[in-house]
Length: 179
Image 1: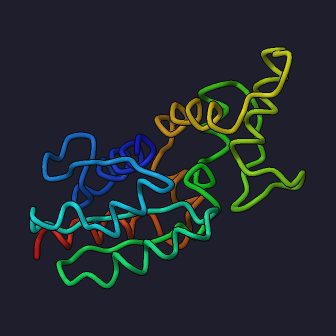
Image 2: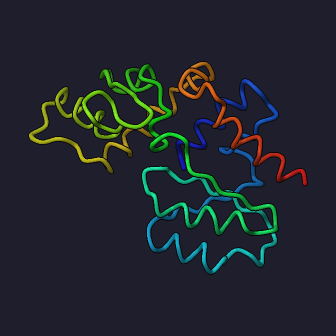
Image 3: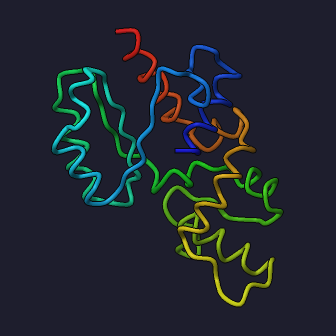
């Protein structure tokens, strides 16, 4: 969630038509995963609010496609998508990670040349730099990488997302609010 907020803030500075999710009070956030997420989608717990929902799922979990399909069948303007890249951290720019932690990480859309997704690659690099006894796990790495999203620039977003997927998400959210 923090990654999406950071990305929207930077993009809003470059294009005010994109909502800044850090300050736009028209948006509320619920972070879910696993079986809890499935129940929220299946039971449609928020339907009585009569507001559209926006669901963005990492593509590394294939079963999320069921939730995407279910949300996209709704007729209230809700929509869901799985990221084109492996996970949200795959949209980070290596320079943003370097600025946050002074480590070099090969950022790839799915897995890097060593076969690692971004959180794993970061965990290995940062653990080595800090001389940890072991390698930082993926969940902790993802938590640390949230700081790197705060260093992203609009130019870096475009470099990591030349097809404009991220801008497309935020544009679609804004359009749903206008409907």
